[in-house]
Length: 633
Image 1 (spheres, rainbow, N blue to C red):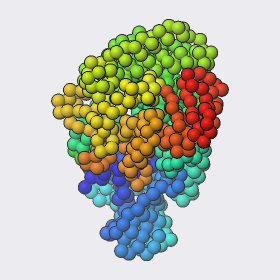
Image 2 (image 1 turned 135 degrees about the vertical axis):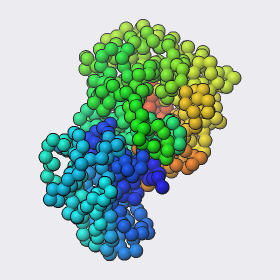
Image 3 (image 1 turned 90 degrees about the vertical axis):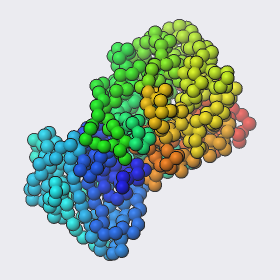
Image 4 (image 1 turned 45 degrees about the horizontal axis):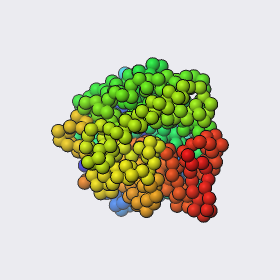
């Protein structure tokens, strides 16, 4: 049987990551980077496409797993009739070569174990040449080599490396798999227990930096750790997910490669990192963003590679049948060439938020923003493919126009409040023109809602960004009516769909249904909080927490019909949204009523904000004191 998406755990080294199933099988690993070809691709195929499994060879009575607290070290405990063992999995923070450390430790009794190693380079298509040298097994194909070091005997069987061994109480048996260039000698291994200890120290030290002290702390810290695990350390870029082609609907064609960095995630990512206390990571992400988008604004892409690569051509991998026969399996993403007007707003919002957090602009960075704003002014009247990267016709998407307004609004604020140079009067005129146009053309009086695009009667959860980004206040009658319409048509079993799809592909050019987009559900909770609907906000948020897996991980979507997670996993956007919503609700539960045209912040941050940005549209009402803090426009 195929492993459920939520039955996987994540380990990583801030360069790449692996998915480990509950049965002890690593079914997905790309080396040496997130977007490199996989050497274990069973996740999207079958056993012949590569995996590495260590598990009891006898019947398992019970399986438990957890991360060591505040780390990315995964421990899976197997209980059998004869004893109990724990499998410890980790990828040490990389210094030279990527590696996976696995240790089988006896807890009680005696347990017979089996190891199966099937290495298949290039997404499961290339069978390597395997040789044995002393205690090392080396698999080579083209430029790639994987070397396995272990204290147990292994042997070949049907193009698989296997080992049968017994573990008794107190005994530890290590396995160390190291990736290196095939033309170089295999690096000598270090003591596996020492490496695990060093890895534990790294993650705990990183987690200790967090300044978050509100409710839901365990889930917030786990989400921050996940976000760090999805960060490509050399550049600071954050990939959307470590996987490709996990389906948005089981058996469907909505399967995309998410191993890249989306500009759209930038603003929310910066918020989440700053709120967690991770200024260095926020700075690195901001710097990656500036480097990636530098150049001709007409060539700005919606996504880039982890180092800022621009060529991400999409192709199909025909020898992989897809997760639960969800084909095609795609590598690369053709959406990279789409025109999506909203990303200019996301970039400007991200750099604005970075500025508020104390990350000052360089002259080059501001010059780049000036160029981007000129481009927005020249093209905001054109249709685009929109936030959901539809492969249907271009339209005048409401969210895109709102984000064009955001781009100009943040540019105006930068000039007025930060004394940066720019034609502020001209920008105000353009900003106000977009605002007027959206109110006239995106509002559907019959539907009593802002709709997906001008002239349509289709609802879209992305319009929840209208209050979140400050286009209108949350208590505006049109926002309230739109939320009511979304509740009626897009909320299913407590979760929010992006939009309604049909078998004709009339909206996005694709057929078949999809699950509820988890980030949209978090946005609705944020909107409830801004509207003063505290009970509804908390209820929805805790409903979302209820579908995290046993490791507090989330995929992109949740299929309420099947009762399971779907889409690429784990998804940065889902965890970023979890962090931001948890912060909002935590403030509310502490007695602060937060209302903002951007995002809610804690009191110390608000105080810094007021000093830096005295005209920001933000106010915080402390219920325990009959007074106001901050400044209301």
